Image (cartoon, rainbow, N blue to C red; front, top):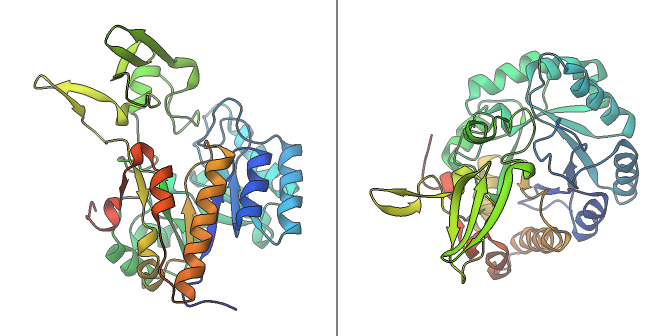
Length: 331
């Protein structure tokens, strides 16, 4: 029976095994990507071959779970075919929807009509009713993933003025930039997360032990220094610790996780259709625990029970959480 706060739970999968974990843990939808630069989690050892994708979609369908395929980076001018092939492969594998950002790819995917839905990626940074309406009217998108820089009040206003489903991030990494517009990594590595599909590519990452602790480096540049009792983080510039006015501090963003599990009723009332968990690069145990927690949260609020979110804080980056812009308005 549909609950008052019935919203789709969209869960991450970086591998075929991870997809099966998400399905078994209670996902309504699993999102994933191919193992190339067409998706924005292009890490070594992650993502799907075409054969794995087909197998994963068959497994999901047997459990009445949908699969969305993220083809959400921007193609290079001299190699658009790689991205177009990914769209064709997604259709051939039986994907329910493709998640796209580039207008050329959105136009290309229109050839499949209603046989494969087109969702607008957060990488497109559509955060106004005017921009969202443009994508709906010109490319037939049926859902928009909103950037993590809008408030609940803004979401409500958008929902009342557009004829499209809205999906929002509810847990995981919090990007301080407007998604799709970040160039921080490319200043140091020469590779853009919006084209190559990964922020701080693994080949540029280095850790160095020193007498004062562990240094994390990106292409030779020191991004952070960790004392022996600190847990070292991955060297992304936005979460680097730098010296300003002689004081080392996190200038862009402190290591923390977005978590708005306690705001689920507000999101439903604002008009949100789907809740998205970030973390395709995370472990199977992480996915299992987060998905089960959110499944229980939705079940609890639909049955009038109080939800205990203490399990989520244990999984948060730095064991700290934030509601980000959903409460404190950025836009």
